[in-house]
Image 1 (spheres, rainbow, N blue to C red):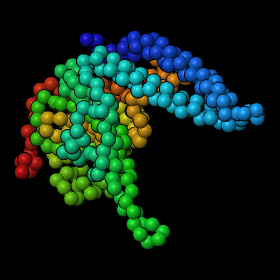
Image 2: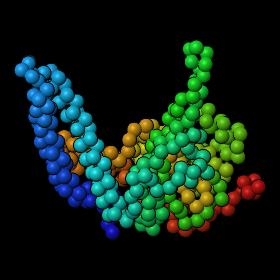
Image 3: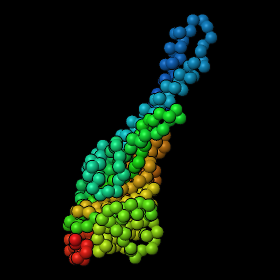
Image 4: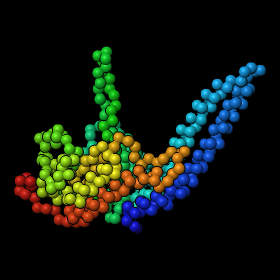
Length: 320
């Protein structure tokens, strides 16, 4: 197989023509249906009019309602079918499995401590498989919490508030890490909480640019510096920009690396029925997939988290 990033580009070009042809068929059916709806409503109105004034205002309002509803239905069907075909085609080209309802339960992310507490969750488009020998799984998740609010009349009500909407990524590594290292958005309060009330301690790195954006904490200073090499830090920041994230967190623990990418907007969304489907219009979706692939690539190149490098010897104080 070609390089994963190039595979996504090539497959997008290959799928685009066929998907655009399907879009045109959907659009033509809708354009045919709109005047037919108008004619049908006129015919019904004519049968209800007995030598009186034809109810044009009523006919026009009903036609507008029917056409609007028809458009929403046609657009929804088109977007769902096109998304499934496009994401399924990309996944197949990469040797991955695509599932519209996700590929792993949210609880598999909880041990990483990078997603917020929540009461309810929803999982959407997910991919899983192996890329260049690296096990990977990623999906869109939406987490909500039930929060009590005071009303003006003094009573309380429970509301559901969204606490996370974005991408959850899990990448397997060929060894078991002894420590737990976490990368967080720069936030003094969060850092204080995790360092003051847990086994984590703040880690200083050699990248001022990275430290301006993120805090790093770990149960082992030595292991943290090994997993966070300069190439990874640079690619991590680039991935955040490509994914349009509000913030990103990462966790290195056990035999897995996990990422939580907060976006607060839909992911892997295909265009609209009235708008021509081009490689340019699919750029947002392909960039989201490429950002994940780029993270995998740089982790492969990392001599520590990658292909079998030995774990560093921990200092006696860290081994306790």
